Length: 268
Image (cartoon, rainbow, N blue to C red; front, side):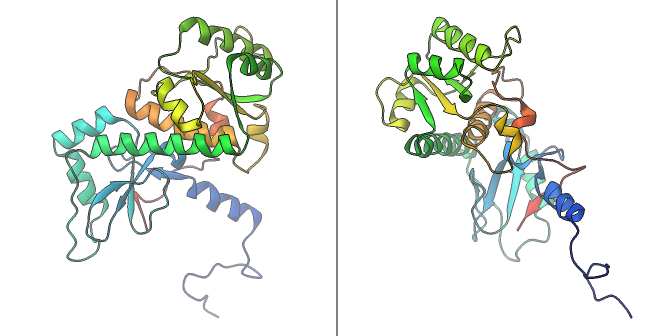
């Protein structure tokens, strides 16, 4: 008997654990419409397409409808817009889209994206603060870091080098990685922005709860993963591909499991 269209061939037509794992791995990657390279979706920025064809930032990747993905690099995006590559990439990616809808975007799209990524990060910090996952105050951060209770260490852009070094060293001791040179991430946000986000005064440094090894042990996204992903995209977008901000959590811990190759350059 002929197998029905789009139906899998198996004894009971059920997915196997391996097939589900492969599907999940494939879903974890997206292609940048500018470079064509595949990356974990958490490291890219989604651009949503509104019903009237407006291209808008969607940092939470939750807007309905069609969308495209780009690497978080403001300088590269600005260059692509200036030389027409971005427009051509959009046309290629959305060829055969909704009839009668013309794609358009503001000249201020790079700034819109930076503002959206900033808001996404500050909102995430506020949520984690209310959930009790954020540690503030240098003394408390140092204590928690030495006890290996922090999954992420962050510093304001206007924090002092001496203050950063002291907490970085405490984090390395707690994580048992002395001599590695690992440092907390310096955010492209100053103490005023962090203070507003967390509803606290003079937030210069902050830690996110979670033992480093736990970040790899569970499929459930933990606080440090969520904050690190939001912080990493903003930092990369502002500083570009060569942004020299070291993270106390490895890229392997932050990235979702990935398969060989990404999916189509658009989603629906």
